[in-house]
Amino acid sequence: MPQTAESRRIGDAAAELGVATHVLRHWEDAGVLVPPRASGGQRIYDGELIVRARLVQLCQRAGLSLAEIKDLFATRSRTRRVALFADKQAELQARADDLTRTIDFLAHVLRCTHPLVDECPDCVEFSRTAQK
Image 1 (cartoon, one colour):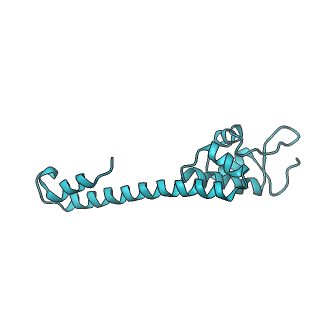
Image 2 (cartoon, rainbow, N blue to C red):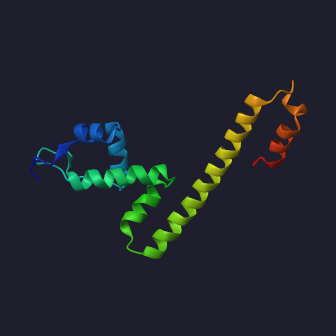
Image 3 (cartoon, rainbow, N blue to C red):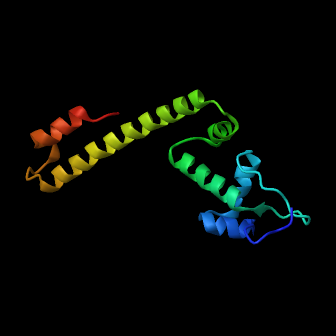
């Protein structure tokens, strides 16, 4: 594949995506992102592959494994896609709820006037509702 004005080599693609080049190679090894090669063997990343790489990043932030991302890109089943993302959304919501409770606890402790947190009825109540 000849390099075009839109295409970039692995170093430039990595810089644009904010990742190290070894991350792109790892994604390639996992079969998630497979760039075509130039005649000299260099990987070539075009705009479409950069978009796909950004989707990989978003999916990873959502908690998907590379195997799940590979499957997501390979399947045309909306049902499977919805099920996968519904599960991840529920996991993220549970984590967000836990973080909100933790932030509320920290805010309370900063205002708390009890000498010890275990002497504070509100702190004790936070401990009763804490998730494990």
